[in-house]
Image (cartoon, rainbow over all chains, first blue to last red; front, side):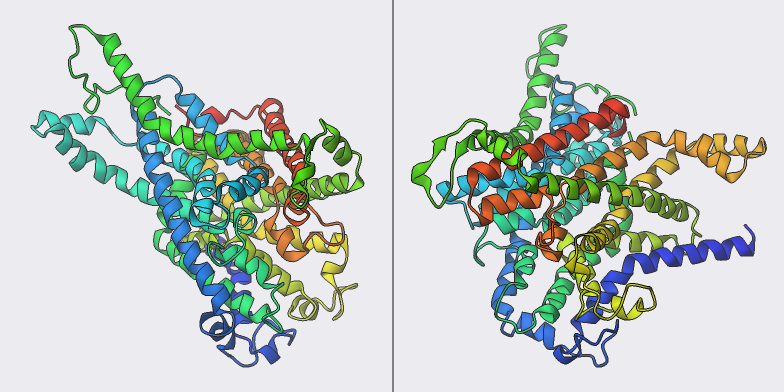
Length: 277
Length: 320
């Protein structure tokens, strides 16, 4: 590759990095603007200020934001855990066993994945009110499974299919018991796939807005995206834009950290489940 | 991809397999298969099939939560009300507009990003890959806020930066008109979801056999010819899957609209209409009917893709 060409690709790469980070940089910049500075019409603050963060973490908006943060973490982790366990069994069966209906299960997962959430949430709104699940953790965890389970099944079965299952037998031939062979050979091979799937499922749950906004009404269960969406209408703030920006940054930090730590695996998981046969 | 091999059961050894009892083993395997996969299957049905059935049922009633006593069966009249109302057609048009614009732009942009990632120098490849995942990871609501604040009259910098463009001044109210508001919504959606498409396309690119590329190069094909005759045809499956998934996703657009415009100035999408009917107006009957119609639209889109473009999902999604 000539130097000219190298430089060209380097520039192209940098353009992508700027494209990807620009809005994030902007919301961070906005969150650091003092109230008087918010409307300065500039990208950067003239003076850095932590006021917005103080407001959402300990100030007047904290009773809106902190419970939502707790709800989001709890609900998303539980939903991720449940869907991973269920998907693990299902994917194992799909990758390993021969039984009629495999295709049905995979097609169902696909159908559920393309389901418009709003079509599910409308009847749930009414039903949850009747059975007392409205505005509770389980009331969100259960519908979140419709988001996390299909993608977990797809990605995990793609991962599991690539495991050389014969190694397990080889270990048994070498004298390991069935359980030993499974635990010592298969589990370590499967663990990265399960872990990746969990991260992707967590992202998807963390991103949910529709369920959060329709199926909750108080800080008892309202997750962060929904709380953020409703911030704008809250009267607690004279000008809620700064605190919203700060809250947006706080919500973004965990997912960005996950991405940076596990980028290679996430890319593999996303594309394996979707494209690679 | 190879079909699932049938390893001699290590986990599912029949306890007392009769001599030559292959059918017993097959039966045991079948039972174990459903035992393991059944719960996930059941949960998926429970969380989707049941609510949609309930929505279909509810849509046949005149039913308001504010007036539950007067719930009455009205057959298909809710659908008649919706389909003869301009609001439905406006929201359908808005939804189609957003879908077509964002998916078209994302496909081109995503392809360009995929090409760069493919070719990027080893030294910057990890950086590019990490960066590209960030829009994917940022939640839609945050992305919507970021873009809204950027274009907003008071908080934004766009009017300052692009003041030199004719028609843009310090007082340009992007959210004051249908088209300018939709423009910003589309930008936010495109920024957020292009990475996903480009990752799918990158995986597709990686599957194009190098041998073919090389052969075409030796034969003197230009870059553009190789792209058109070798690369793109060989990744048709990946392109179709990316298109289908993004179209369905875009068609359900809700978060951005909710945050950025709240459906004002005729920027309501179909999802938002369903939300507004049910949750804001508590018209369960009408809202359910909108939900069912939205569901039918999504089914129609998938069906069209699979039939017209012959997307074989079973072969591209890694089905056995």
